[in-house]
Amino acid sequence: MEGGGMEMRRRSHPALGSEVLPSAGSSTSSHQHREGGTSYKAFFTRSIIALFFILAVLVTYLNYGPSYPQAPVLGAIETSLEHRRPLDLVLNPQAHQSRSPKIKYHNWTVTSEIRRPDGVAKKVYLINGLFPGPTLESRSGDTFIIHVENALEDEGLSIHWHGLHMRNHAEYDGAIGMTQCPIPPGSTFTYTIPISGQHGTFWYHAHEQVQRADGLYGALIVHEPVDIETTVTHSYDEDRVLMIGDWYHRPAEDVLKWYMRAGSYGMEPVPDSLLINGLGAYNCSLAVPARPVDCISIFPEHSPFISTNTSKRYRYRVINTGSLAGISLRLSGASLTPITVDGGHPIDVQGPARGVGVLHPGERLDILMSWRPTNKQQYTLEIALDDDSFRYPNLALAATHIYPVIISTDSQTETANRPSQRVKPTIDIQLLKSTHLPTALPLTGDHTLVVYTTTLKLSRLSNIPHGFMNHTSHKPQSSPPFPLLSLPRSQWDSNQFVPFLPSTPEHPQTIDLVINNLDDGGHPFHLHGHDFWVLSTYAADLDTTMSYGSYNPFDRSEPPGGVVNLVNPVKKDTVFIPRRGYVVIRFLADNPGIWMLHCHLLWHQASGMAMGLHIGVNEEWVDEARANRSRELCGSTR
Image (cartoon, rainbow, N blue to C red; front, side, top):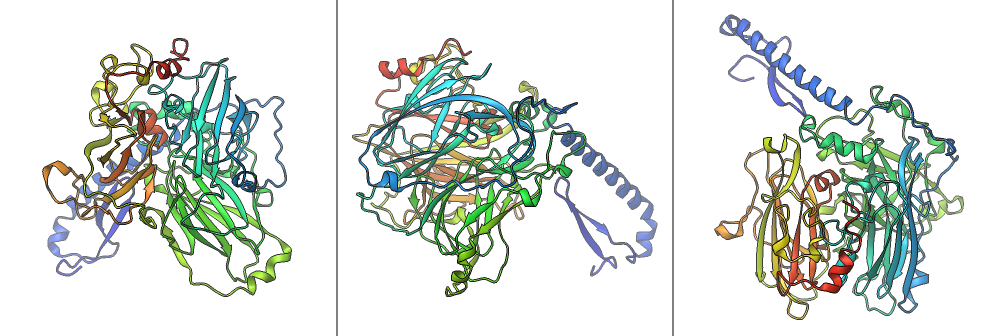
């Protein structure tokens, strides 16, 4: 190093930050020799502190979740694995696009059973014996009526229809504490789900505690009728779904218990594996001896696979069903072109590319896949888990998951004859913009809300991590134990942060919502009952500043992220808020009801990172008919 006579090098550890240490064999001045003892002692002290910190992290990691002294007993459950398990989940749009709208009835029974989705035995939730649950297909204008029977022994449950507006049916939105009580064991609840004016990729999932992490979810696809004039047309031969999400080998309830204690230090539990459409391929040798699992290794020749024909073009509807990690995907030898996000909202086509990412929990992305000219003999689907939310190492987790792609033998030559195409390496999903706006957006909204979200470990809460929205950590109403939708505001308790927005469908107000993230990790936020335009996204540069990248539109200061985008903002229902950053979203408050807004990282949601938005004509007025349906299940579940 110039001027010091000593070459320096930087050592770093993700949990320790960086420090500059002298390289071995570096020259020193006599003055440095005289201070060598002091420097050595300081270095030794720092090393000891660092060692203890690493040991603390490892002890925390090795104690994460309960240890099983013996493998779970499978009883009559089949322990062998099929030789080949296809990942293909093929849709049938032709059966829905040309028919008239209708009411579709379904009877669901929710149970649980020990299964091996990725080779590791674990209790999962089933709907009519299926894991994940059955795929729902419909067209715009349909109505689902779904009778849900809770056949679990000792758990309540609810189902949320992620991305559907549930217009005039807020009581069936599935948000525990806000729109309904849990369905008690042995009871049945009927959901009425209208689908008017929407089409695209949606999904349903449990909204009671953390059941989603144990598999209580499924795809919900609404096809666009052929009689609706479309602004963007994309041709493809086959329509498919990829539900991709991180996976925990411990029961989600136990994982939450580990997180909700002071000893977790607020570090979110890192997953163990990954599933695609309910299947995975875990390498048992990665399992940590301190946390044994009942595991049957799935070798490459038995790995789940995707089958394709290189003469076809595919539409893949990708849903991140996970609890913590974002995902990126790459299909070797193929071109990927994103066309819509979340509930079928068109985007300015950026592609083709070899890969796309990062897609965060709750988000959806529709992509067109076609094959490029290549001499490759083997093709793979590669899924990488984004480690930005991982606060400690999990030695049991593979960072990238690779699945074989089986190519039809009669189509290899067709790909070779196709002209080559300029292909990008990767498309950043978070930078996508809309194709156009049907009407110009006003310069400002009618109302502006500013909220702050963070995870805190407070002494008054026994240093257990809790998620906060402003000063409130959400819990379902306990006294009286009824959903907020069924109570006048004067009866709500102090755990409810639900601003009132005076607005009606006839005269809807435009709402600008600024969500500031004070944490060192990002948060994907989902708004029930509405879509919104993402006007601005900003992340503080932590390499140049340690300040929070917050924005308060009321102090008249310049937004750190610059002026908002009113030209081509993307429309979504789930948005990622970067660490120490913010988003500005705008929506039309044209759907009366109480709608939850929450982080879709499951451990944050379960620890209180949620709030509501109350839209109506009077903050004390309660629709009695809707209130009665909302509290139908209450009284026997708490």
